[in-house]
Image (cartoon, rainbow, N blue to C red; front, side, top):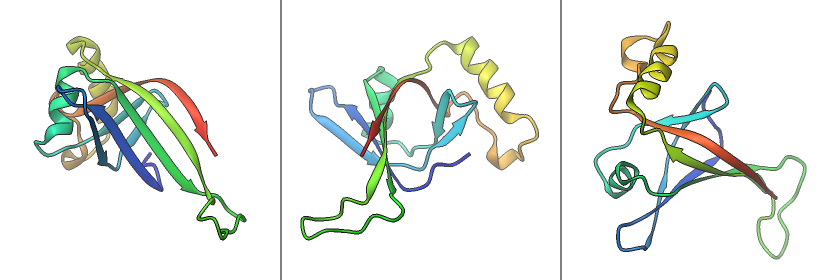
Length: 122
């Protein structure tokens, strides 16, 4: 399943400064988020085990924009950890790859986040 809307993943750089990237994640087993990233600072932060917060913003049907701005958004803030355990990651990937074409399969290089907590937005 792919999430719709605007999805931003936030991590922390080695110097403590924030890092944000727009992504298109997939949801698997209602427990894992997965997506691919080109080599960049966000990927490096994942490899270090940085705190990961995924914010999902969706349009709220039936609510109009106001003179104060667009308040038609709702969604969730999802707190995650990078799945580091190689054997657990391999088992999740094996389940994910069942009946997937080769160009949609995950590998051990794929980003796999474990959802720890979800807070609503809006």
